[in-house]
Length: 342
Image 1: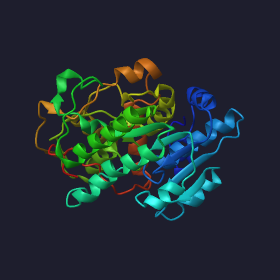
Image 2: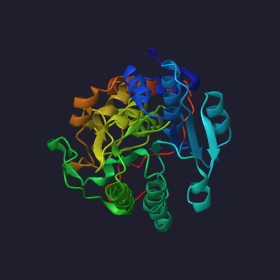
Image 3: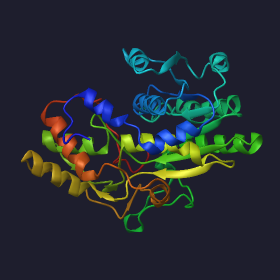
Image 4: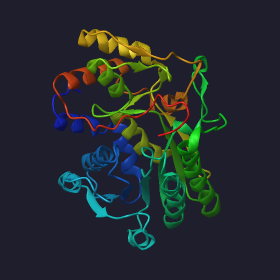
């Protein structure tokens, strides 16, 4: 890893660098790999990581990315990286049936932002579509991306829920995410499909994420909302690796894995750190509550080891990225929401 990331090319390279463990897992998988919903925030670098890993071990497996590809240039970028692409609206039953029968599926489709006011579409994307996919690919191994939002707000001092903790989603978005999990669980029980459900909290890129949200407010002199005073975060490259390594955990009923960093991160402390780097003062809004949306990732660390990138490193990279005017996606996470409205 470079000390600082200066360009998007460097950033993409860092986010898609496969670990030896990723190479080992993908080498042992029978057959090709297909990522459904590859056009989202994590999909492109995850697909590139898979392609690089397979190339490094000298195998001829295909990596296929499926999405609508509404973002200009994304399909061509993936093709240049050796990822095959299929343009497809997955809600189109006929188009879904025409997809190749691939034995290894990464399911990345989900709707979060703009869900308030579009609740019906949210449930179609987050529950109905997973049911279609789980039936269509019932003979495949499936690693499906979920979220820590399926857990309730929990006391900060608790360290967050483990995978055995009862779910308790707050708001329709989180409820629909639990519905997504239930569909994969139902079809796994019906057809014996081996799957892993990855509950992620929160992936960090330099172009979006919780830490960037805080940094941008501090940099611009806007108040930092402390309503959700604590969070868990993980470098997106580490999250990509965890998702791909989760093929080794696939089982029926599906395995569940919380994926996030080991720290309960204080938003106040993060904002103060950015202020020190920028040489500014922080303006505060609200106050920390006794509960937050958290996840306990001790199982992830036990199985896969600690993340490779620390919170301090992410803060340093993001601060530099803002200083040099690096491109951002303009998509706030709204992590401070306590009512589940996105």
